[in-house]
Image: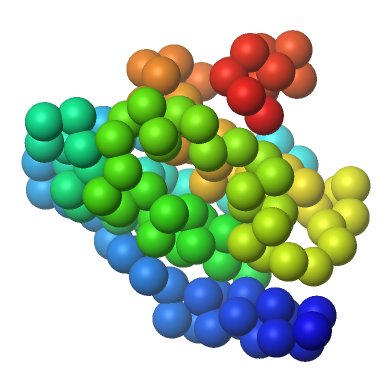
Amino acid sequence: MEDLYRENILDHFRNPRNFGTLEHPDFSHEEHNPLCGDKLRIDLQVDDDRVTAVRFSGKGCAISQASASMLTEMVEGKTLEEVKSIDKQDILDALGIPISYVRIKCALLGLKTLKAGVYGVQTWVEEDNEQDIGW
Ligand code: FES
């Protein structure tokens, strides 16, 4: 079973869904993983409080790119309230394999970027603040 999840991760890494940028995003935010310096940007277009388009760009390891790709599939068509309710466990469930403590920041880089963008937070890296927005 884990093999299927691993294959899915590799597929998202090699063929990332919604990769790129939007010309006129309503929300755009970039974050980095403080452990490696890799960066990720997420753009959202929102119409009537619902996500009508999403793109991600940047570079990072397979886990960070795959989880960002999966995340974009999760948010498409959702309301902003629904987007805000996506949490760490949703990402870990989508990845479906055990993620070591060291790789957790890779796995959650997309979510961190998305949440910072949607909440209008410029940037935050402190664990305490992460707690506030549902990590
Ligand atoms: Fe940089 Fe994973 S090693 S995001």
